[in-house]
Amino acid sequence: MNAENAIDTGTHRSVHTPTYRKFSKDQETLRKETDKLIGSGIIEHSTSPWSSPVVLVKRKDGTTRFCVDYRRLNQITTKDAFPLPRIDDIYDQLTTATYFTKFDFKASYFQVPIRQIRSTKNSIFNQRWAFPIQSSNRWKHVLAYIDDSIIYSKNFYEHIQHIEEVCSLLQEANFKLNVDKCEIARTEILFIGDVIKSGTIKPDPDNIRGQTETNEPTTAEGAFRFVTAAEYYRKFNQKFSIIAAPLHKYSPSAVNQQKMNTSQFVLSDDARTAFHELKKILTTDLILGLPDDTLQFKIQSDASVDGIGAVLLQITPNGDRPLATTVKLVEQDDLSGRK
Image 1 (cartoon, rainbow, N blue to C red):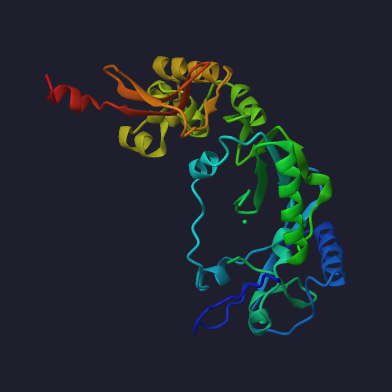
Image 2 (tube, rainbow, N blue to C red; image 1 turned 90 degrees about the horizontal axis):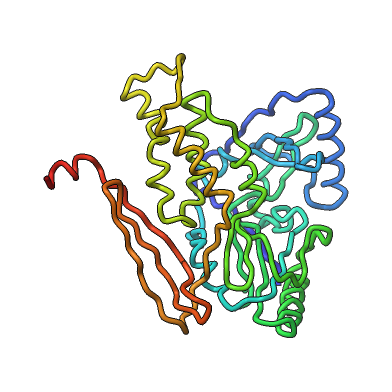
């Protein structure tokens, strides 16, 4: 079994994007990376009217990631009708899982070969040669989100079996793993931005730390940037959006509408209170349960002049466990219309 990718551009003419300017040290890095890819058989010499430029991206560990800017090619490529799965649907399948394994694929996008008849369309240009390279358009106890994948199981014995099954399929498809970055048989694992453990999810502490260490905003842009980043965690707190409302008046559209003087920015009292209250919420133990269809559910609601909120709870032997929260802000026009 070998996976294969085809690039269908219909009757479109070939596209060519000139190479980007690079510093001398980047040219040397590019040469080494190109030679490495040629040596491993991922790319080969070619001549083609199609060409996309190479982009070198620094990884967190300081090494360089070899990327290609395929935006123009992607614009004219027929996309597979395969939408990304909903994250909440993924989490729903992990309710009873207690063991997790996360695989990291070695240069994952390079591992899917291009169908030979189309291979010249994904050529790259690096000022020395043109090469065809891998492009975009790209199983029961496995979940995948883009190039992140985990194996999940109810117990350790099952987990070992599931790992063996998946590894067998990967070997059959000739996929290679980056062993140093794989996490095997963990009871807690980070996946799609959240930490998953024993039927619960909580935020990645590293991401939370970045938010809680943010200084009080000194610009409208900084205030709005903070609240938009913090909004990801609103699912963990029923009143989050209500508390955050004063900071949204610093959105670009609101600033323009109010003709706010951003050169003499002063954070309003209600926005300052919201900023510090949100940071306080982020330091608490934010955690949600994953739904268990064998247990009863109930909804708990609340309302105030600022908004209407609700929490979906599950009745467990250890007490009610929150699964999800929602809130709708009440506009002042709605209030005045009901007086």
